[in-house]
Image (cartoon, rainbow over all chains, first blue to last red; front, side):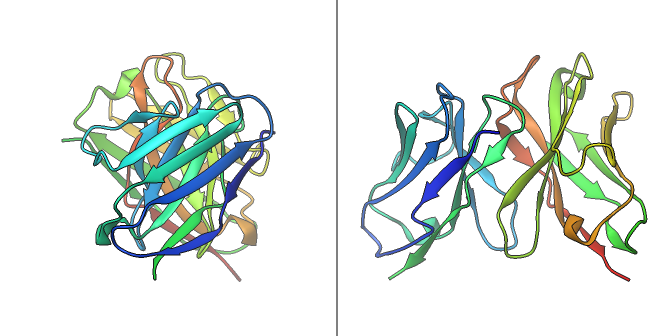
Length: 107
Length: 122
């Protein structure tokens, strides 16, 4: 199985800050990676697919990038509504696997 | 508007069975792969199963293989998850989710239901 190691597990930041969340795949997955945002009591929301493709309706302050097997979600100029938990997911190979999640908290 | 509405969750004893349903609307159900993802309380996301749209091919996490069966009724735009031999570790919110891309799909999930809670306890 492909392991997705996500870091950090939690991060505190302020409105207006820039935050970076990383996901490392245990083997090559090309660009078969997605990022989701989940708020308490809600279903996950797809933010980015194919490593860097911003989904329709997602603010441009969210971006994704890839370097080999390392993937990064960057949120620039944090807004109050961005405080949530973020998950990465690989879709290269079954079983589909998710990262452990990163909880983004208000400082 | 795409909608996915799950039902069928509840309290079941260890070893028991449940059948989850996910009624969909707002997109051509037949042409999209669909999946189930679960989340134990306070935990992360765990993929459970996927069924392809056209071929109906099915895939399962090892943790549920042989106990759970995913199926779809394209005439009713409905996805199912039959869960047998339930264990305490199967307790979770179960989400159905739609593949972002039609046909073979991408296994990225762009629409999710609200989730249905499964509790396994004696």
